[in-house]
Length: 173
Image (tube, rainbow, N blue to C red; front, side, top):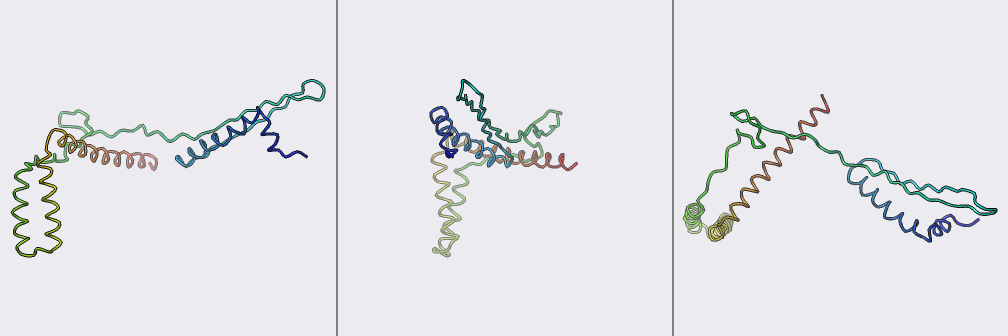
């Protein structure tokens, strides 16, 4: 009896056998990403033709699991009864004058250096003062935007946590 893989190799001059690894990989990746079942089905249909001949038609079907789509969004209600993604009870970040902040830290660093020049606190403060110096030198609109975007990212993360908790409560309730 002829090995089955040899027949597969002959279907469409090897095209079917060439497609299968890619299609299987797509299903495997989706199953891995979603944790849900997937399926790869190969259908070979045989139909009689002339005497001693068959027509073989192949069909490869994939059942690729889709990730669950979260359709919930958490909003907060403002005093004006508007919806907002920002919690109105959450305090805003204070405006920071980098130059003043740097000056305070530099004077504090001098005091720590005098008392114990080799301490971890001294090294940490030197790093912080260096960072502040750099921030003061580089402070421009782009830096402000970066700080605002980072704050927004943290807010969005908190909102996403609340949304997940809400969705979990819906599932349990």
